[in-house]
Length: 427
Image (cartoon, rainbow, N blue to C red):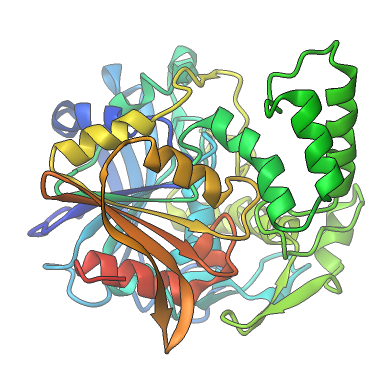
């Protein structure tokens, strides 16, 4: 595996984070034990010509007798790989594939939206790829994610507290996370207030829910008829809202995959993206079409017979979410001198930015820089504030008009934010 860099920093990027501190605990032992196989990929099906960046894929064997085989994509920095940061990118779920991060968010390639319905979607270059400023390892983790697998069926049984043992990584000076589900209960409970703030439900809906539910919207007593009624009214208002991006178009209500792919009438134009954004299922089905093509699998070096159908997010019953909140672990990392960046798209109902602000403030860190706008090309791109603890900093930032996967909806703003933070500059 191409780790032959003079690593200046390392970072962990997670969209849904349950176990940040545990990653820190297992760095030393995992690195020593890991075995890997690798392939250098020079062309990809659907892309015209040779890849203008260095792509390596392979498997990292971890766990007892290397029974867990984690599939990775390593993309070398297009700027200065010897001196640029090394980033480990982990998508959430748990159980989602990092391929989605590559093609839908901040990787160097993306699907051409004009090729919807094709047997092999076309790939184009992403001008806002984060590989223009960093070396990135995209890891399919845990074992039931993407092209990763286990040779022992028992190895698929894992949890928040045990799966970090399988991570092969480096952690040096910092980490960043996007739209994190740091405290699942807090996030789910916050959605009602957020929906009201964004004019998705009325003040009557909110008052009825608050008075009948006591501001507890998750663990509701089944005998509390008024609360159940209030939540049903709210659900009715939100049923056609895309929770990951409330401005986004809902997908056609159909069971036919092909009809979803062919229906390209449902779309909007995002100013920053300068392109038509289709419904989420269209984007995800493109990934499934491409990743399940046998020519693609061969090109990527996927081992035959190890997994069946590639699924973007696998809902495995073998995973135990045994850590309900990782908020306190952020304070631990800050106390150890690690600087952090937590960012949220402000149009994300799945993990509202207000819930993130609440758990950050619960850490009782010192407010070092008050809430202010951060800008791109003289325009407000979002808002930020910074906290301090013994010389280490935790920065929180919103991205204006963005959703759950910030680089998908506002790629230029996301690129600017991460570039400034990696360079240790103010947003």
